[in-house]
Image (tube, rainbow, N blue to C red; front, side):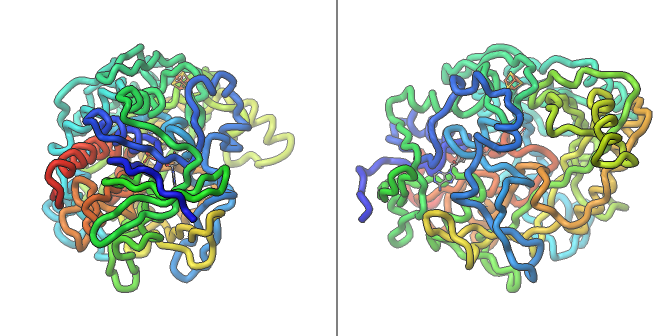
Length: 570
Ligand SMILES: Cc1cc2nc3c(=O)[nH]c(=O)nc-3n(C[C@H](O)[C@H](O)[C@H](O)COP(=O)(O)OP(=O)(O)OC[C@H]3O[C@@H](n4cnc5c(N)ncnc54)[C@H](O)[C@@H]3O)c2cc1C
Ligand code: SF4
């Protein structure tokens, strides 16, 4: 029998960036907020001995335990979905801070074009640029409407950067801190891309270039370029993460607490309102009901979608009929790129998660797509994030991938190779979606989330186009031998690619085509908010978190409005 706890004003499911932002903003407004986090507490003090590649980057100690819960996957509707038993293509966060603890910190705002992609595409290229199999949608909000919230997120995290990119949206204020150091390798990329006529700029970085105190009074330190950033927590407190920014800001109000080891299994509802959530204590197995006036799902796209599905909230998308919105528009990204092999040794050891330079000359709609078999594009970057020894074995393709020759070439090229890569946008396709699995359950008896996904024609065309650009840049950087990545085939969930999953709980102006409105308020349940990259209608050519953070700030404002007036906010 579940024990019912005292009611709170707001409960969040999960405490990563989205849960932390909602908590800080609502608690500052005097609401009693409780965060339910299925993982444990952790923070800077736990990361003193973290430079252990095997334990953290390969065995994923900071991340979700797949023996408790995972997803099932198939490439298409005809295949049998099977569980992902080991983390691969993407890495799921768990514990305080979520994936915001072990992210890189590359923090781009999506482009103005992204938010009105359908309108803009049709205006410029007509209605049939992509076939009707691609479920392109505007987001129900414009870049200009979201700009103040981008600004707020950047000031909270102290983002380091420079406003020299001609292709991104207008900013109302400058970056809170200056860009990171421009290393000799970054200068190599900068010169090559400038010589080719492109527009390089420093990656906006949440690894801070200098010490910073944010408007909430949280202090973030200066990055030491330690090279163990992606997949690791920062022992210097220099990577903006929920545990060093929004979570302490929320706790400081006295209106916030977090229950750890609390795995939420259901959103409870009555009529057109939710009443709270049911969770299981993962240490004792006890069951609890947490009543709340407002429930906010902040448990990443996979779990947000799954909780709505198991709680029977909203209509599940059906790829055969096109009906329903929940689970629709799941998108991923493509990573075309080129590797260059050089004669001289280079310092590839030092670095930081978001130390790099980027060009947007082939991103969004910054170039003419009239003669291309795709829309959108990719940011193209060179990053120096610290080459770790176990996972990095760069060898030219004519060298065998085992044996003495491989070892010799791997050692030789470890400090003599560089890569340039694109983060390619992904467009929604009618056959790519999320649903509930009918066979497999998690440790708590709840069905697993099922993913049906494959790369599309649009992806393949874009991949080829961007690969060619990266080869050209690498040659210009002076590589003695340059190799472009292989053409895109079927999506494979095993090798790591990117943790930029989007869609499934999309936002929009119309309940017939989206799950939540532009305050991320559920169309069917007015006191339920669903926050995360699941709200994206497609995936852009950038990392997602600035856009997720901006949407979370706007949601917090929406919750405040809802508390005052009730009803639908949009
Ligand atoms: C290796 C890596 C590198 C990345 N680098 C970048 C980058 O450079 N730039 C960028 O923009 N983005 C990056 N990302 C993505 C970024 O980390 C995410 O966009 C961001 O952290 C998402 O925040 P979130 O709050 O939506 O979810 P999460 O951070 O995943 O937090 C969700 C929380 O919910 C909890 N939870 C889940 N289910 C339940 C449940 N049933 N009950 C209770 N709690 C639950 C989880 O334990 C977790 O703590 C990276 C991600 C990874 C893994
Ligand atoms: S690279 Fe910088 S931000 Fe990243 S873990 Fe090291 S010191 Fe921290």
